[in-house]
Image (cartoon, rainbow, N blue to C red; front, side):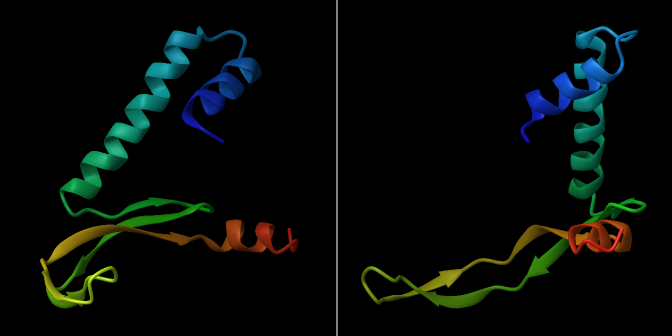
Length: 94
């Protein structure tokens, strides 16, 4: 599902809301999650999962095309851990 499909589904299920308002709500939620992660905060949605940021240390990598060694800088990457409810539902237990 992509963002526009999510907005359309929410708008269809809530006919009392204008689509532009639903779009603003969805965009605000995504922006807040992104901003929180950029600050290094953890975002937890109960029953769904938790978004966090993990730090990857600098290392020496290898260019797969040429085989030469390359210095890879330290970086921060997003990480998602599923919640128990979502995990159970994906495995057909709920």
